[in-house]
Image 1 (cartoon, rainbow, N blue to C red):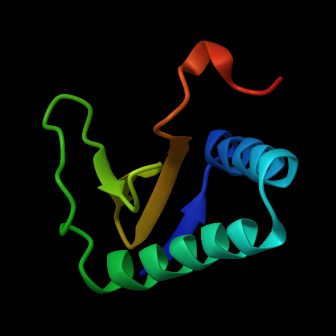
Image 2 (image 1 turned 180 degrees about the vertical axis):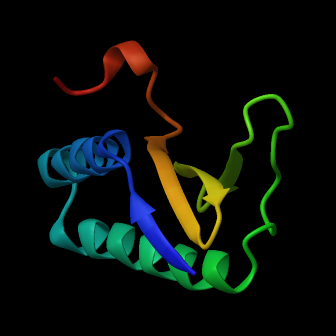
Length: 95
């Protein structure tokens, strides 16, 4: 299996990185990338590990108190649909 990122997921990751760069240090940015890398390893090995929704056929992986990844399984691909910082209201995201 391979992991692919949607445009929305890449945008979410970019917003989180911009926020981390503005508020924190490179160390937190590196930790963000490490969490995503670990998520990829785990989800490739165990695609159904994280809780799923029957209505929208998405799964939510909570990688930390602050970070959630939404994904779906499509054939031999794990499609990351969105990456969200759980502390943000969707209306308060950086623009």
